[in-house]
Amino acid sequence: MEYSDFMNPGNVDHSMNSLEIILYQSWPGRMPDDLWDVMRRYILSRDHYTCKNCQATDTRLDVHHIVPIGVGGSNHQNNLATLCFECHRKIHPHMRHQS
Ligand SMILES: [Zn+2]
Ligand SMILES: [Zn+2]
Image 1 (cartoon, rainbow, N blue to C red):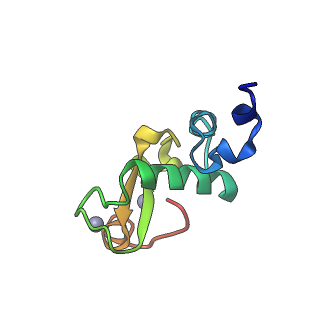
Image 2 (image 1 turned 180 degrees about the vertical axis):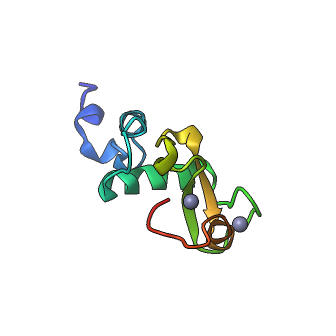
Image 3 (image 1 turned 90 degrees about the vertical axis):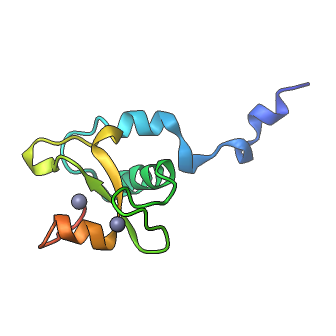
């Protein structure tokens, strides 16, 4: 009887489901907040909660679209990077939601 572990929902890590990420990153255009939240947490974890620009860790961290969605950028993980609030603000002088 070895199936008990498989049946145990406690063994499923819903916060880091790579299949979800593969599906979500092909989302066209701006993601709904709940999908974006999963994607964002995945990128923060991938980048070890460290700003890609200044290596800050002990501050507010955002996930930035390297090529903005508005000019055809994708939600693919290769187009997403962790930035601290200060670095992110410099890229977007008039920062709007989720870009
Ligand atoms: Zn930074
Ligand atoms: Zn940004």
